[in-house]
Image (cartoon, rainbow over all chains, first blue to last red; front, side):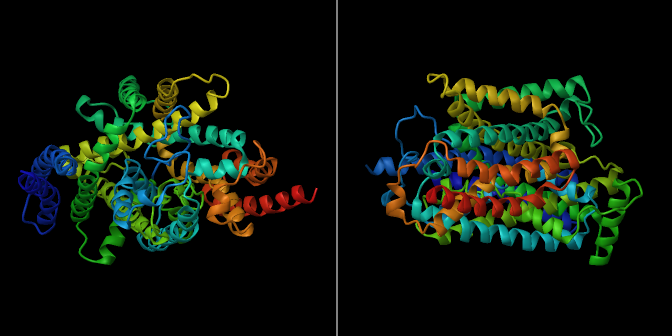
Length: 63
Length: 465
């Protein structure tokens, strides 16, 4: 479960940064950069708190 | 920019924060915790303001790159060799440490100054957030010539943003602190992405072209004057001392008291070179790109971020402003609570924090605080950092060690030697900065040194007498 959310959060970060690099090498339009960054933001802000929460629960479970 | 930790509330029970005792061995943390924390805390809403203000001040690109490179290095060294070594030996917060030297009443005076300055800093962050919140409402953006509110809508949005921040901070900012930790890796990447997009929009293929575009941007922003008010040394000093209250001012004793070794002080490299280098340069490029594409030199963070990153940029400005304004107001509230409790022992932290939030909101309605951020952080350092000089000179010239210092009972509840040593350099500096227009950040180091030396001299005299 945590691995899946981790992958989603990493995808969110990738969609935040990589589009700007593609824009810099003329492979993506600015509008698409903005759209990708918005999707990246949503993915990160939804998945990262879940990952954080699951990580905090793990030590409790071991008790 | 970063807010600092100050006095804990008196009515709070002993907790894992070790607010009234030295941090024990079992609670010490490795360097990894500090790297992440500093990288996140220095990617704040105010970074969106500082980079563009360099452009408006006519600083050359070369001076920005090298001034920030070496100035930030000096800031890192200050944390590593001035603040961290004392923190890992004494293991007290700034408040506790200073109380042992200056006495609790003088610490309360210091806290009042600290609290008020926090409110104005938070006010600038509220202004920054309001410029992003105002975009969907077609709010007329304040310009650098606006010292007062420029429209009723701006005031309404500032009040709305300020009240939400004040209320959340008053209820306790744990949730926001957690959210800030979660958001910080994303915010850092948004800053970087904004910089990359803005750089591309500038269309420079070489260093010469970039320099030429930069000079044209300055020329446009200064309406044809092209005058630089900041050279290499100004940028260097600013980068070194914009967080003076935290490193040479010793506010981050509260952070590094949890460090196993003083080498954790190197973690501040992350904050300085991510937040105060990459983010400032990225924000400066954003304004230059805005000038090139829209012929608009207004350094308002919301629209600048929206131009290069769309909704993600707008949200980043709001989150960056909000997550840093919240703890700032919370800590101002603690400072005020410590003050008010001397007269009204049962005053609640909720109301003192809410009052701090209202002061910050009122300050946020005046864009002048945001435009004057370069000067304000210098003033902030000039007033607060000299107390760190007292701690530094006290520790090394009185040859303190951890065991004796931790059991030290304050000699008085109001140490006059500390007060005089603080006021003698700071009061005239305050006059020269506020009323004569001298550059504030240049006063930080002289005030820090003079305060430390005077404290030594006055303490010796007191002992002799």
